[in-house]
Every structure is written in structure tokens, then in C-alpha cells.
Length: 200
Image 1: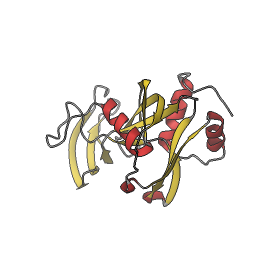
Image 2: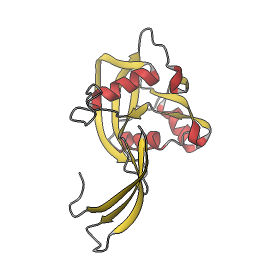
Image 3: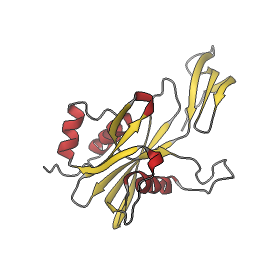
Image 4: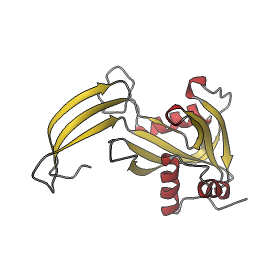
């Protein structure tokens, strides 16, 4: 929820496509009487899912990321194209929870087990110095592989497999995991006491 006292004086759009918009805004803030000019990348919100298996492992995907020219380990995630109450009349309405479940299936090939639960864990801002993009965190536990799953080649996902918490801790410590979504969700899980027991 936005704090009171923020006022957009003007906004000039420079570029827009289906995924983002670049604009220069003049904004009056609660603490300053003079408006400030800021170039902002407006992006759709996203979901980030921590899938935990019955034996307490966390499923990560290994995905090629063109902007950084690297394949990295990360948790399943994806932009929210259309949600209930959204503004795109051409798309079916999905709740954020449905988007999270869909991304889990499409990217990782996993789904909630019959006794599973999808737990919302709030949101964070990916890089608030230049974009308003927010990521909504979810814990999915326990998850199980989808039967007859076929990976969508357009996703650029090279591999998907479960890791123990100890393995992920080592990967973070040795800078093998450097995806902001994954690092932030691991921190949220730790802070909430929701990390699985550390197994080897």
C-alpha cells in the first residue's frame, strides 16, 4: 500500500511493450515540496515460488538469462499477466495463487501434493531505485513431480532438480546462487522459520 502524500505531477512515456514501460515522472514526495524527476521502468508484478518436496528439499531451476549472458540457479518465477480485478479484458482472470501454481508446473514440472499447501509470504521490490516491479513470495509444500510433464523449450530452462537446504546454503555462500528473487525468498523463509530441517 502506497504511503499518503505522493503525487505524480507529470509522466512522459519513452517506450512500452508487453512486458515493461519506461517513463520519466515528476513526483512530489511527502518529505519534499519540490517535485523530483525520475526515470522509472514500470513492470508487471511477479510471483516467486519456493517448492519444497516431501523429504524437505527445495526445487531449483537452471535457466538461461539473456541480459546477463549466463545460466543461473533460481526458484520458479514469472510475471503476472492478468489477475482477478485486472485491466486486460482479453485474458482469463487468474488469482495470484493460480499464477504461482501455474509457474510451478510450467517451469519446474511440479505441483502441490494432495496434502499440499500454497502459503503466501508477502512481497518485495526487486530494485526500487529504478523499477516499481514487485515479487510476490509463495511457499509450496509438499510438491510432487507432474505426471507426463514436458518442458516448454521457450522457457530456456536447462535443468530442474531438488537441493537440500545445506546445499543451497553452500551455493549462496560460494556465490553460485546470485538471483535476487531466490536470495530474497530464502531470507524470507529463514526469517519466518519456514526453512526445512537441514539434511545432507
